[in-house]
Length: 573
Ligand code: HAS
Ligand code: HEM
Ligand code: CU
Figure 1: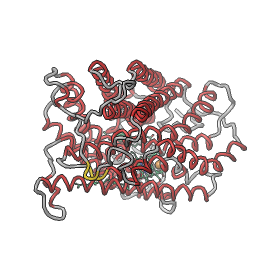
Figure 2: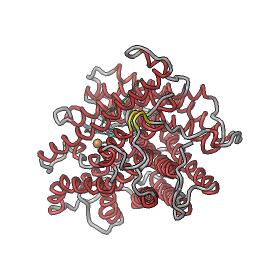
Figure 3: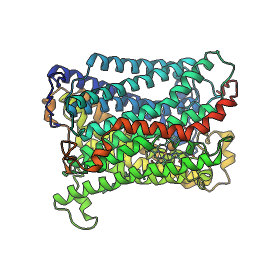
Figure 4: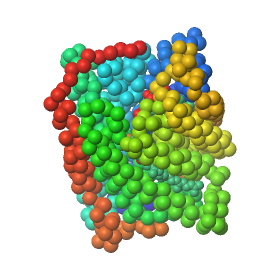
């Protein structure tokens, strides 16, 4: 278990067993809701992969009953996987960890209320999605206009995540007051930094949905400005990818080393990476809008350089993660420049999932740098390359890490034993293999010029691709859909059979795999290094983030407000 930190002040009650039971149940609810959403989302994926293999399944009457069109399916896939799965898992995960790490008792009524609000938002948004009344894709760019019910449900969901953020920041501040002069423990530090980043990030989306999309879809305004809406969307839309990534990083830094049999590299460096993400994640959104008119090039260039800057903490992470894995493997007798890799505990599905997630992220991150470069962006923008990029970032680095986390988290929360560790291990390799194949096929097709978000397999469109030499990448993409389908069956067999099995152990007999640090931060700020002291004031760093965002977004948004365009909505489906 996490070393329980003494709740030194009587004003700050520690976790008692009733609260812990409730907290575990809540975390389980968040995680299971998340993985149910992913299950539906992932069933649609292979159909899309077949589309990019030139095979059109969307005219089969049986499928037509369930989804009306390629785009309704794609909307469900994007929303359920990228928005619902991630947010639910993360909300449970990043409340549970700091509460345990600090040993502070959260207000459980509030915490359950938040979960129910988020679920209500999800169910509300699901109705128009399933009724083909909000087929606007997960980016819901206006002037595509969906049912107001969709936007309201989505807004409630995001608002609920901000309530979790508030509760965690509150817990942390209460702990700080009760422990003056102490260094924030590293798991809490990472969680609070991520939540604070998300608060700054969410402002754009909240403004877009509350002030633009909801009134417009209710018919209260005669139109909406697509450029401003896109700009506010990407204010949130880029940092949201770090909101998906950093919870995985928490596991790579704090838990994976122990699972691999070693130690975290350095608490100071870990904190530096998260402090950098807090400050630099948001002011980069224009790298999604290089092709948008009426945005000055100079601002696009500034956002490009800031994007390169925010890749730095990921590079720090790569070195830290590699160092801690090497430390683990050498401790188990590993030798050689890279021969040590063989000494990692490859039979452990949880560890393997995360290391494979990291390997995928080497390519995903490199592709991201390509996307961000204004010289390359016109080649890859809006092509199949882009889904190639994000299935090895959010679809693997994040998703495969969360899958691996579930292998210890479910036993830890419930006292149930993991059903078939061998199947679990197989599922992880199939997922990794499938996604690497998918990424190869899609990046390749993108370079050939195949667009994303296109039903390229529809007979009317096929002819446009006849002249292209893409038979092989099409085949790879179609095959990857099958491999990923198998991976999903294996994974969900393990997850569902585990959840349905009887409780066998005391849940605490599967502890949180917290790692020791080779270079710890020291318990008090006075003993801590300069780096640790400088990264401790997270609220001040949040303020710096806000200032930077206003500096690089103010001059971009102000002219859009001054020239607001009222564009009427369209329904293309
Ligand atoms: Fe991205 C588009 C740029 C990271 C997700 N991205 C997307 C979209 C999504 C997404 C969903 O600049 C599509 C949005 C849409 O629908 O239009 N992305 C970047 C850059 C990074 C990046 C510069 N993306 C992510 C992450 C995501 C994600 C993370 C989700 C989780 N992305 C872009 C751009 C676009 C874009 C443009 C717009 C494209 C367009 O034209 O529309 C960077 O943050 C990446 C930094 C990462 C690294 C890699 C570090 C490696 C690590 C692993 C180490 C491995 C080890 C293993 C140690 C530099 C940490 C050792 C192994 C052993 C066996 C020992
Ligand atoms: C889009 C396949 C799993 C998130 C796509 C596309 C394909 C695909 C082919 C591109 C569609 C197009 O551009 O027309 C698959 C397969 C999966 C899978 C075969 C595995 C079974 C995931 C996962 C996530 C994810 C796990 C995230 C957690 C997305 C998102 C889009 C997308 C956000 C973009 C939707 C849009 O453009 O509006 N998927 N996917 N996918 N996928 Fe997946
Ligand atoms: Cu981005």
